[in-house]
Amino acid sequence: MNKVVFLVLLLSSLAQAYSLKPIQITEHVYVFQGRTEHFSRDNQGDIVNTGFVVTGGGVVILDTGPSLKYGQAMLDAIAAITDEPIVKIINTHHHPDHYFGNQAFEAAPTFATASNQSQMQTNGDGYADGLYYLVGSAMVGTEPAPSQFSLSSGSEKIGNLTLKYHVFTGHTFEDLVIEVVEDNLIFAGDLVFSDRAPTTPHADVELWIKSLDKLSEFDFQYLIPGHGYIASHQNVLQPIDDTKAYLTWLQRHLLSSAENGIHPAQLIADGPASPWDKLGAMPDEYERSISHLYPEMLRNTLQAPVWQER
Image 1 (cartoon, rainbow, N blue to C red):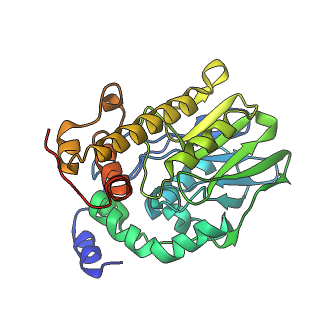
Image 2 (spheres, rainbow, N blue to C red):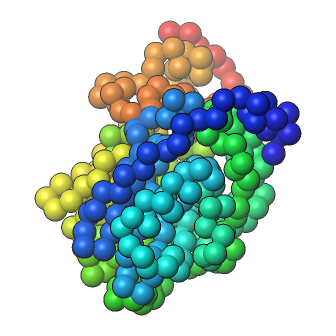
Image 3 (cartoon, rainbow, N blue to C red):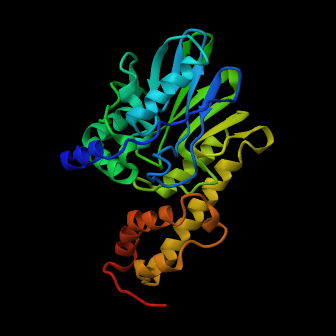
């Protein structure tokens, strides 16, 4: 943690407490739905969908949000719903808005895939510096708390429910999807976005699209995306289709631009095409994707940058 940033934030006025209200999706699953925005001091980083499962044998937490304070607010909200103890915390991947709340759950074991554990340990301090800068005083007291135990594909019975774990790839090196079998529900993490532009800092777009195709073949009635609106029943595949459509457009658009030697500054100035410009977190995520994906595309197509103004 950058000590200068930390001290400045300690001296600043403290952010208002998170106001987390769980939405009951099924008999056993509740979700805290975040805003479809980029990180800001106004939203305090509350832009992610987290949730919990009341199994009858204890509560399982699905992602813990961007900060210590967020995790503490989760604890308070869960206590108002059930007196079952928290028995397991699962982090879908290593991006900080999905695991920085781990710090609030000291008594419960935390799990992620082995690759994500490694990324949390390696990059946690850098992620923290970034979020302190973007979110401000809502982060005060937050330190990275990487998952303690590894989790891989498989299933287990907790209380009255069966949880299945599916490891995909594409959005990150390993994207964990949790299936609550008895409730016909999928908690997709950031493999799926809904009405919000996908993030791409560790993306392999082609693998991501293949993973979405595989996920769409699953049988489920409820889909909780990592960011955005919850889908159910006849519209349950819509977020998967929308995520795939955006990624397909983004890949083709950037590749075509690279082949024509378009300068990245020109891409940013033009902005994302319609209808993608209407997605949440635009144009921030489009501009970030240019920085994440475009340099390698230029190298692969041109071997050396050749700029062409339009």
